[in-house]
Image (cartoon, rainbow, N blue to C red; front, side, top):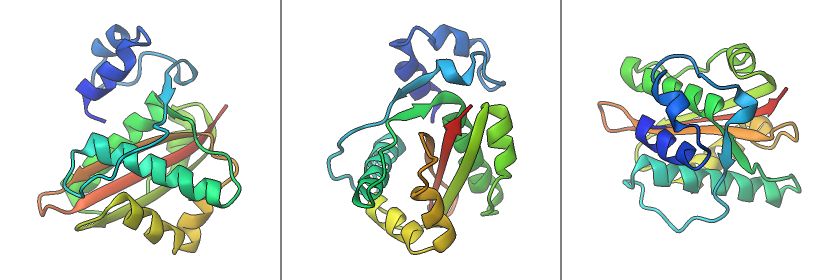
Length: 174
């Protein structure tokens, strides 16, 4: 998530000042202290919409897929996991290497007990298309539909070739 969006979301929690001083560094607050509600609904967004709107629409679509399979929705993003997703998406965009991060890092850095990651890269990717691609892949489907998932971090960015890169980290805290 862009730093300005993170700060605006945290302002309501009174945590923006704690993160401003440590921008770009490790999080200054415990992972359990910093969450915000995932969007519950999203209007249809164009594939060229801003990444914030696409991220919200993607989380709504993930929750719809989870509900369709009788699973609880993911109601919260957490700052630590979201920041790691943003950093990983930026790394993929910068290097061109589409590979999964070692999820032990997400577990360790954000004090999680479980973590799973889904990645996608392509052109004209809508949230519906991203979720459909993940559900068609057995290993990604297992992550999206894991009953262990309770929180999320989502990043959508574009690389120099104009391709959309999506990173979703689903986690269970503590």
